[in-house]
Length: 544
Image 1 (cartoon, rainbow, N blue to C red):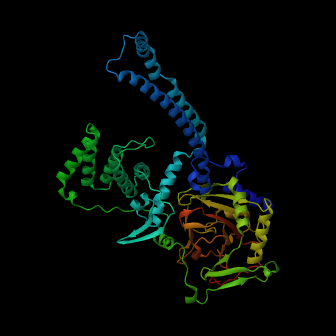
Image 2 (cartoon, rainbow, N blue to C red):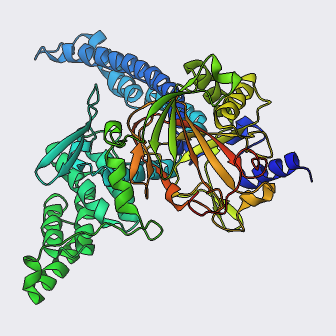
Image 3 (cartoon, rainbow, N blue to C red):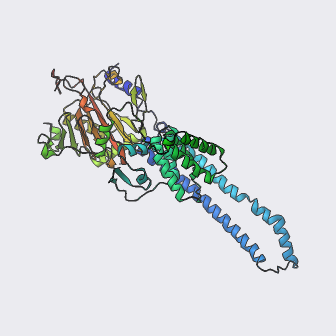
């Protein structure tokens, strides 16, 4: 098998490229890429059209019912309705025997609603699945955690970090969009169903508060009610060890639904528990955030994400500098690239304006039809995971001349061979709602990694291009380097994954912080060891 064939085989194993764009989109993965979320606007517009036609039909029907009502009412306004008039007597008999029956059993109402339901069923296959609702809810919890967002603020449409008495605005939307009680209930219920009461309680508390404020109002679209929120919140508190709160909420529930025997039994159980252990009534329950066993660097990672992309100040560290880079390449002599050295160990540089707006848009457009849920290696398998939320596609340079130009530019700047099999095809990634990639290495850390199936060694370097801007979040955090780089539209981030000895550089552990607000696109070019022997010579010194 030749090098190019080996590369193709690897990409098939990674399952990140499909043969037919029409088959790429999968229900249940809408939340994992913002471009897929944006596509969900189209079926909702179709549903709006269906509802508009339904409302017009109902308005016409109601106008006709109003006409009939006023016609009959006018005959009753005169206390001495002259039924002696045979014409009026006839119409009275006719109305009671025929007209009222036609009004009550009119088919027009059922025909209108049937047309709405039929239209919905035709659109239904294009709608997000329940898994998308769960994924979107988990994304809100992730943003809540990583950026220390206040749930009450989020429900009002405000992105605020609250630490003690300090309140910091992380993002100020041009238009506030608040959540309803039912919205907050659905987020809380996703956590509740996972047994995650740390997240369930604040969201359900907000749901209860909002439902209380609007009690008695009926909203067609709501799935939950105040009683539902009280029921779930009471049990969540009980599971968290706060029996007194569970009791008070259950008693409130019975005020609205006194015949519910299950909740009545719960009240008796909670009262008995408190009678047996009076100290539980005054004990303060401390909720512990669920542990993430695979993420040992969570605090550092989240701390770096909370800076929203910060680097050392250059004038304080003279070895960090900016320059115009040509890399002694004729290709760059007439148009050098602006280079910013971000960090020395690991060596990370940012090349500003590496691509143009038109090039970035072209690359996004080429990749969009092929996007599939991003996966990670798990033994011999490639699986979607909660710690990587995005969609990705692989683009060969034969797809469009812009990709050839991009390869030439990367090669001129890095001095490396970026043609297969010495480098992988361009990977384009679109992040989803709260999209992120928790701390990881780009290079293989296990001899059994699928990366070695290319027979071109490990990933020696990463060249990552920001194809879009974001309004907040989404920084690239280097955990052991203790710095993060914000998303800089059209810029490219470059770092070495391996020492010159061929050993992996542990300081390159990095993460894509959750996107707080915005649509983040990146393109990755991973360059392998083989083919670079004379371009980046080896060294026996571990520190090189």
